[in-house]
Image (cartoon, rainbow, N blue to C red; front, side):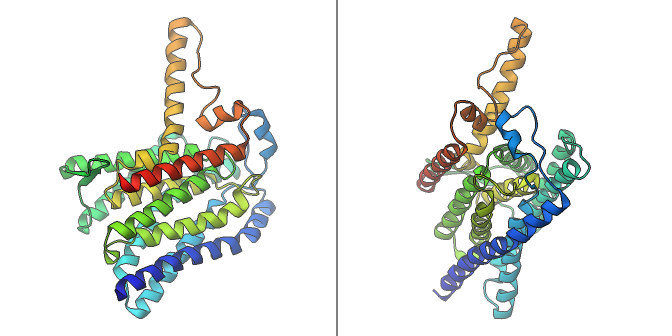
Length: 342
């Protein structure tokens, strides 16, 4: 009982601390980005009205990354002093550090775009290889620490499949890299990736708390820090955004979401709780494939959607950004509730 009370305190502490640090850091950090002229260049392929967002500071993901990291670090220091829940918080630290690795990839990409004025940043191959490396590092470290379970839980039927390690490692790498890029594609409207991921983070926090022994997992602590950081970030990122998270933030979030799912053996559940992420990705794949097929067959490329990723399709249908963000977030919330009981 005492352990559960301590765990609840640690979880709530991470939420509040991450929120406070991110919220307090925001105004000064945004001013600093303005002074450095680290503004986002809006690509011409997007909706024409997005051009008015050109110059909005980017790399704002550093704000909530700092808040989350500070919350996890403070929790570890306090637990070490009190000798309570240290293993749980160390797991949260591992999750944060590996997520941070993906954030660093995003930071390099943003830096090249904003500072070096190369609008495309890292090449697709460079990002893919770096993401594979970090995913491999996570799996290998967890394996040698004896913390890697090769179980995959199938939703609805509650069936657990155990697969051999030689197959599990590439599978996890695929899940992590796929999710990281899916979250990255979702970050295209003010507050969209922040809102959707805050709901996903809350789902993992609640699921981890009620379905696992508190002393055995740091996912709840980490997830609540994530939620706290994102809620504070939304103060500045909601429409009209004063700052964008950039690839720094979106790749970090993709890493965080995928790693929490892997830690809880919920790889397949990601399709449900992260439905918005994968709908965004699938829309791009379908659009590109169909365009190339029709161009080859009919001499001109045809489209399924007005524009992709799919949030742009709804924009072209005259949906307001706030409506799209609200609908996508509510869809995520409903699917998270279903996933909890699946």
